[in-house]
Amino acid sequence: GIDSFNPLDPTVHSAAMGGVTCVGTGPGSANVLGGTFFAVKTTGKRVDDMVVKNPVAMKIAFGENPKVNYGDKDKMPGSRMAIAGMLREELYQACQYEEKKKRGNINPGEEDFRMECWIPVLHREIPLKAHVHRADDILTAIRIAKEFDLDMTLDHCTEGHLIADEIAESGFPAIVGPDLTSRSKIEVKNMSFKTAGVLERAGVKTAIMTDHPVSLIQYLPLCAGLSVKQGLSMEGGLRAVTLHAAEICGTADRVGSLEPGKDADIAIFSGNPMEVFTRTLYTIIDGNITFQNASYSQPAGQQVL
Image (cartoon, rainbow, N blue to C red; front, top):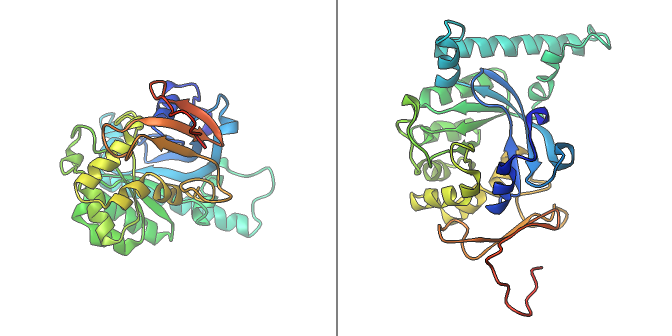
């Protein structure tokens, strides 16, 4: 959540330099249950003033990260089966807690704050945010979300191109990436920039992530371009880092496209932002210029806006 966010980290300025005006961020994937994500602008000194929406999702994780993190310490979960079992148990307890609250069996001041955070998830106000790489983990996440009638995003979705039709059938969107990195784990051996394009053609709403610092956040447009190179449509590439990303994060009422009534967040480039030689000229957040390329000479007589 916001309590772990450092607005003065150089990453925030790096994002703005790359034309990224708003990001979804939160805890990592070492634990089966990580905590909540939120959306934040990439300018400011106090996170409270930068937040666009909090929370936007509840982070959960499948696969090697929680398995290895705890299995190597001889603790639960040491297997994929244990991960699924622990998540089901947590969700069952959350459902029981919600039922007690609905019946009025929980008095004011007796709330369990470990369970309270699940209420927006159970009411489908925010989705589960599932860290999933391998095809079987993706399908396990879908299975559990359907069992409890929850919304979910499929994050990383590394082997999504192998089960694109099944993902499309689920109705869940995918946030693909990072692909601009090494195959550091056995579960990402099928990593490819073609994933986003295959999912797009199957009818899956698709966004692209850098998972900074795995891939540097300022190269988000380049990651979209590399996906276009491998089959994602040009429009799909742009939407994957703008409108689709905002819709998936539940922030499209404020960001993600240039429309009356939305925040004045605008990135101006020297060309197609998905091409490697393109430079960010200006990044404007809430109507204020937060980055200006010092090497760019504005033609005489032309205004920025």
